[in-house]
Each structure stands twice: as structure tokens, then as C-alpha cells.
Image 1: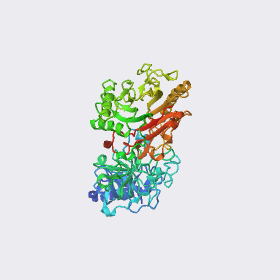
Image 2: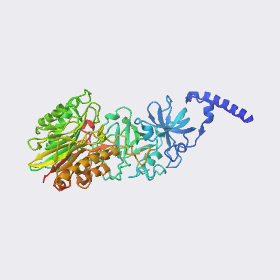
Image 3: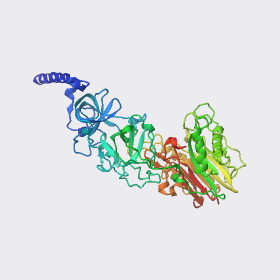
Image 4: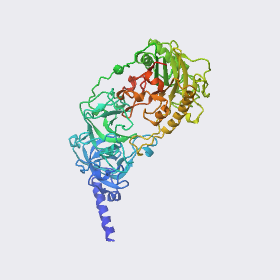
Length: 610
């Protein structure tokens, strides 16, 4: 009875105190809520040395300095003293709509600890890591310290070293920030950090600028970026997210850099840790001078040799591709690629692009590019294409992307003597040649559902035959992000690509069984890395990926998530390898979307056919 009376008296006293301070608090706690809140000496105790807070579901009261406002409803606070433990973050996200506090305010926050899933894709709760957050019942401003009172930022890679190579080594079972990058970033979640003399790795997109600190010594590739390897996804690179207005219009490309620090707070969104800052608080960016001609191909046209390119032309259609892009793509083919004899293209759309008219014809889209090449001084190409079924091959709905070929009839001929295949017809081998020309490989196989069908075509150059197989395998959509809750990451999309690779490989084997000396070239966007099981399956024992033999500093065709990487490959008969000169022409991937004609770089190979 005595305990009950004492508790009642304390609650009433607390209620009076809360009412007296209501002008400073948002919103007022009820006596029961205030009674339940546990005062915690340091935010680091709430964060804990783990991916998830030990206080989840509990009410706590902490103090910290407001360091960053994240939208109208949330802000970050950081313990100005810290708990002295590098394994526990000294900052935390606070959800408090309409709280009246500003940057530099020292505040007391009371509320429930939650693990909040920040911005992400629809399935983020099944894939992403959450951000520890206090869902505030009360925010009280204790005093204003001003910006001078903000905690000193951690200088990344100086005050704290970012782990190299290893994202996670133990399935998130052991919290080891010194070794595992995923734990390192968690240990500074929400804290103020700075990046000194940052080097830009690739183009800004989605308001993300990927950088490394100036202390990073590489090795960098030839555009100043980092190319992935089988054992290195570069966890030391940093995503700087530009919050507020203007982030998506910010100009940055590979090779640019800063001579003043970038300062922000560590956040997490879309499966990646990021340093979040405001666009208008970014230091001046210094142009690194990278131009489109920095990587001119060393391949010199030779009338006696066949020149072949592979080019993902990124959703190209007559109706929706801008005249500027059409013109620039034509010029790129002529000037950057020396008007190849054959161009394998990916993502050629039907004539009306994303309009779902039911028609899949792409003759006008093809002619649009042919005319652009002619206007740039190139040859009069001819299109080789089989129209897909409507909305059956994936990509943008209604657009019906497909693989196709453009060839220069003054230099090469589409081998005659057999009919062209139809949409659902499967090409076979007859006497070492294609039964249909062009012909689709096993187009009714369920593995090709919602995926571009591979297209085989046989060409004759200087009396010698070569069979090309154009491919655009299923994308990596559905794979875990590098910093997701599943470690090691699950590559859900790989299984289908691997099975498709086996289908294509079986087709190649059938051809080589009939003619072991057959000249065969697989090319296109395989949506996989040169060291992946998919590419290794396609190579087998009789083919070789030219990308794998290419110099490491030039081995990339795409930029994504801070990494340069290979998605496009050219795989040839082993007998052709010593007769090939190969190059990747980097006219697109290092540059901003409005300063390029595609998000992929074209691949180029010159071959002296036996």
C-alpha cells in the first residue's frame, strides 16, 4: 500500500513538472509514459555493439546534440561526449514530427527504441538492415550550442579505418567493426563524419555521389574508378547522399575531386550505408578533366579483318529516344567504333517504345539508327531482327526490347540459303550451319520467360563464315544488396542466368560437334561479371571470354553502386583468340546520364578470320 501511495505521489509531482515545462517540450509525456522511460547515460548504450539495439521495445531517455534534420519528421542527435567505445555508435535517429529544435540544440529525448526501415524497395523489410531510432514522446531543448557545439566529425580512413575487401565474414554472428565493413558502418550509424580530399568514382545518379577518401591509393582503373574483382567489392567506397533540393541535378563524374572536406551523418537507405548531407553544403567540386575521348580505341580498321561491336543502346526507339541521343549514338558508332562491320545491339525497342500498342515491329526504330549513322558519315547498315511476342521478353512494358544486328552489306553478307526464323521457331544446326538465319535459340523454353531470347545469325566475310549469338540475359533484380540483412548475399537472379547459360552452351556444343573449327562469337549484355559461374559455364572448355584476358585497368563496361564492373562480354571460339584484338570503349559509363548515349560502354573486337 505504501509503495502504491508513493508511486502515486511521484506521478502527480512528475505531472506538475511536465506541465511547467510544456513550453519547452514536444509533445508532453503522460505520467505513465514518463515513469516508464529509462534514463540512459549514453546513446552508445542504446545502439549497442550489434546490428540491432538491445533496447528495442523499451522506453529510454537520452541526451544529444541535434546534428542533422532528415525531412520534416526526423533528425539525428549525437552524444557530445560519447561512451568511449568505438564499437557503439554515439548517435541515433529520432522520429518526432513537429518537434521544435534546430541544428546545434542540446536536447533530451524520451521515447520507444525501434529498428526503422528507411527508404528502400518494396521488400526492404525482408532484405535491408534497419536504422536504430527513438520514436519520441518528448523532445526538450536544454540549450542551444550552435554549430560550434556540434560534435567533431570522424575523419573517415584517418580517425577510423574503413575495412578493405571484407563486407561480412561471419553471417552477422560476430560484431567486428575492425574487420567487417558492414559492422564498421553500423558502429558509426548516425554519427558525424567527414571525407577529406574525396575522389569521385563515377557519375552522380539518384542524388548519390560515390567517392573514396584522398588517402585511398587504389589501384584505380583508367577513368579513376574502382573495378570489382571476384574477391573485392570495395567496401571502402562511400556513397554521399545529397538530401534536399538539387541532389539529382548535381554534376559529378569519374575523376572529379574535392579539396575541402565533405561532412555529413551516416545513414542507410536502399540496402547501402551512406553519408547524408545537404546539396548546398557540399564543397566546390573540382573538374578532373575527363573527356569522352580519353579512351580512344587502339584498334585500327583493317580492310582484311572483320570488325564487330556489342552495344547496349539503352531503350532505343524511334518514338521516344531524343533526337540528340539518336544523333550522338550515330556519331559514336562512326567516330568511336570506326563503323563496325557488324553491330550486335541490345535494348532495341519497337517503333512506339513504351506505348503498348500490341505491335512489336522495330523496323522504324532500326531505320532511325541507320539514318543517324549515315548522317554521321557511316555506312548504310541493314537490320537483322526477329520481332518478339508482345510483352514476352521483359524490359519496359509495351516496349518489347530485343537483341538485333546491324551489318554493313558492303563488307559482310548475311549467309543465304536458309529462311529467316519466326518468333517461336527454334534454330538448329544442319551440317555445321544454322537451319534458320537469323534464328532464335529455344524461344519457347520456359527459362526465357520475360527474358530476351538469344539470337543466332551467320555472316560471311571475305568468303569465311562466322556465327554470332546475341544475348541479353535476365537482370540482377531480386539479388540481395551488399549491405543487406542476408550475409553472405543471396544472388537469386543467378540461378536463371546459369540455366540459360547451359541452354546456350548446349546450342554451341551442338554446332561444334558438327564442325569443331566453327567460328563462333557470343556477345551482348549477360548481366554478369567476367568471373561469374554464368560466364564460366558459357566458356566451358572450347570458348574464351576476351574480357577475362583484357587488361585490368580497362576491364569495365558499367558503373553501379560505386563500382565499375563488367556486364557485357564477348566470348569466342578458342581458335579465334590469338586472331582477335579486343577493346572496351569507355564513352558512356564514367559520365552523367545527359552526357552519354547509354549506361553501358560498347565492346569492340577485330578478328582475322581463319
